[in-house]
Image (cartoon, rainbow, N blue to C red; front, side):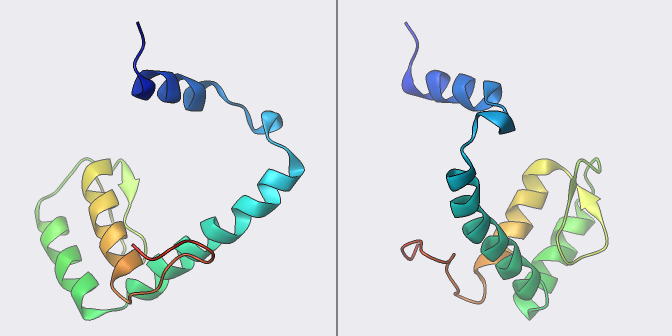
Length: 99
């Protein structure tokens, strides 16, 4: 018996871009671009720089980009620093409730 996480993971891994409606694509553009803009703006902040120095000192295997900084690291560490950058200015993604 599959659990909800497995069912959702299989759905996400099998979906194709062509399966998405043009309306859904248009709706998704705003939060995706807004989230990216938050990460770019946040990457210039002192806290992002400090966390970035720490993450960079840990090394990693160049799997994923650290947005706004000139290096790559493991996916886990890139997600961490990109998340810090995306939230350090206390902006929220357009249309999404505050976290």
